[in-house]
Image 1 (cartoon, rainbow, N blue to C red):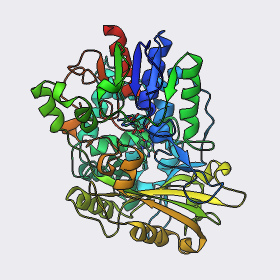
Image 2 (tube, rainbow, N blue to C red; image 1 turned 180 degrees about the vertical axis):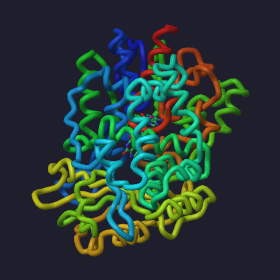
Image 3 (cartoon, rainbow, N blue to C red; image 1 turned 30 degrees about the vertical axis):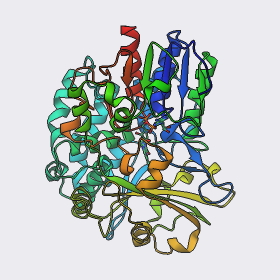
Length: 469
Ligand SMILES: Cc1cc2nc3c(=O)[nH]c(=O)nc-3n(C[C@H](O)[C@H](O)[C@H](O)COP(=O)(O)OP(=O)(O)OC[C@H]3O[C@@H](n4cnc5c(N)ncnc54)[C@H](O)[C@@H]3O)c2cc1C
């Protein structure tokens, strides 16, 4: 491996958690080396021309509210060109207009008619609790910033969506809540599924749901450039199979999931800890699609054109069925589809007049089934004529995703199941980032607070390492 000895810290993996961890260590004066398996840095933040020349697609993360809300990124204050679509999210329905989630909670509530008050009392209340609540949730084992808000939020968050939805009377509001909560990849009958839905919807009101101009890669590039400015070094194209391949360093942060850590260090880990990692549960996978389009998606409700993110799947009952099928290891005939139209906020993603489109649906972990047809049928359902605009398409199932990034085990984009049983992960401990190996810390999304581009796993692991070494 290039990049000799003389480092205080080595970080394996350059996802948002690895890079935030590296920046935290470098800012504290440590000499840091980042080692990345891929040819480019950024992990889940990479942007590539997946379809046609000049069309820039986010391979993984596209919409980054957590990056705006996260204490780690607020503190770094990187120069990143975040762009907001006119409407953060939309949820089209078969009968009647789409539900629109606006930046303003009041405007959203006004569109929900009879459920306006219920929206303000659930999602609106979460948004009103503001950054102190978000900081508490993103640093779940630290000192709560907002204990009172957390106590108020907790009972609603713990409910399955199927139960919290009883607070709503209209099909539109119930569907909108389900569409938000289904990001978690949980069966909507499971506890805590409401918590994910409430927080995501509240972030639309609190900070918006932005994309990065030119693609999420811009956020990774800003971190890499800051790290180099602090004297950090990075090597790409180097996959670590065993910890003994790393140069000697007092601190090692691993931006990897438990399965890779077991492969890198297995025999040297105490048997009890190893068994706990072996019991770590991965979640469902995704089938991801990207398109180059000749024009904007022809939504039946034209208001959806202004939305950055679109939730497809119809009613709460339909989305709940789709997610229950996936949880039971089956492929839904009409999958819940999460779709992003970056062009609503950023015209730079395609040559003039053209558009890019990004979407995925959930599938059982490791599924080999091509879901392209079912995903496109869901889009056509709400946007007749969509297929006529397709210039090129690219689909990737779990195996291809895992080849792109070894952290996507079986296509699981959450780095582990998000349920209550794994809220503290990968092992139940007050300091789950620490491993039994001296100086070695896990920092990936398999540690609290879990999945998403917030960098908090990296910050927590790096701070723990700095306090101990
Ligand atoms: C299709 C998809 C869509 C998503 N959409 C969103 C979204 O819109 N918004 C959002 O907030 N989040 C989204 N996410 C989730 C988000 O991308 C992840 O939660 C986040 O990237 C996790 O960051 P991380 O640093 O823990 O790991 P990653 O970003 O996965 O980075 C891990 C890095 O480690 C490297 N690595 C792994 N093993 C080794 C090894 N042995 N040696 C060297 N390097 C190694 C990998 O190559 C990779 O670069 C999405 C994910 C996917 C896959």
